Structures are given as structure tokens and as C-alpha cells.
Image (cartoon, rainbow, N blue to C red):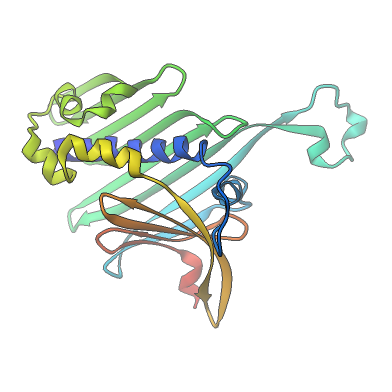
Length: 269
């Protein structure tokens, strides 16, 4: 079981990185009908003025909550003096990068609660630089970090038997069977087939097939319908939807197996 959780944790990292890498290559697509450039929505998410507080539902039953955050790193412009303090902020500071974070917990069953948090650091041109993630399911903890420049991934696992760690290369993610062997798990292709359709070939195919699309849409909010953005992709044959407000706040996320992340603002109606 824990080998599977480790693999899923690495897989979640792979999906996040895939989105960030694909985003950087998505500029220039022509919008059609209600389709909008992905860059427009991505910029809104990065510069959202407030965090998004989300309830986690499974088959409409609340099992947890999380907070999504986006922050802009800023520094004073060179040459700015005290007399310039009354100038607009964009004239006295410059952007040094962005950070995206998620922190929360969810009940896997009546006796176990999973705590998860991650942080992604982006450069000024929005390319990812660092990733740090942690999942805790007592007595087990999985720590995952990655650096884009070094192209290295560090995984540290703590359980009843102690602590072990592995240093992986980005290229290792292309071969999930070899990846699991490096992680110390006795995992065969049959087990990979249960985790990922098509085994390691399925993962490779999914890496090329994972494409996000952005659309202009509406959602029912109280007694009114409001304009939103809708992001969608297909992972292993399952649709994933993310609804974002016009200012970049995460409103609603639909995942496979009836897992929904719902903004707490919906609970007021």
C-alpha cells in the first residue's frame, strides 16, 4: 500500500510539472468560439488577490479542506529613493518571481487523515524553478523536492522502519518500472497496470497527451450566473475540470471518482 502511495505522490509531482512545462509552450494558439488563450487564465491565477479556501468532497460528502495560494515576489527598483514612495507601486518595485502553494488535509477513512502541502517557485517568465511537497499519513511521511536547473528530484520517506531517501533524475520519470525499483519497491508491470493504464507505455503516452484547454464559461452562484474561466484536460481517460473566477480565484475543481474541491463561498448559498 505504501509503495503505491509513494508512486502516486511522485505521479502527482509529474502531473504538476507537466502542466508547468506545457504551459510555457502553449502561447500562440488561436482562440475559437468561447476558447481563450491559456496564458490569460494562467496569469489571472498567478496574480489572484486572495487565497482560495476549498472544501474537499467525495461523492458530495465533506472529507477535508485545503487552501490554495498564489503570491508575487517583489523587490524595490534600483535607484528608487524615499521621495518616490508616493509613486504607483509598479514604478517603484519589480517582480522577482511567483509562488504557488497548496496546504490541506483529507480523511482517507475514519482512522486516518492525510496532510498535504506543496510549494512551487516560478521565475519572472513563469518557468518553474523549485518544487517542494510533503504528504503525511501517520506514521508515514513523504517529502519530495525538485530543482529545474539541476534536473534532480529528492524523495525522502519516513515510516516505522526509519528514514530513507533517493536522488532521481528527471529522465527517471520516463520509465515508471525502473523508477519504482529505484524507490526500493518490489513493483512489477502488473502493479503498474493497476496504477496506470498501459503500464509504463501508458505513462509515456499520457505525458505527450496531457494538454490543458481554457474556455470562457458561466457558473451558478447563488441566484445568479457569473462569468468564469474553465480549464480542462484529460488524464488516463478521465476529464479534469478547474473553474476559475475572472480575478483568478479557484472556485471549483472536478477530479475522477467524484472528488470535488469547492470554494467555501458556495456554502453561503
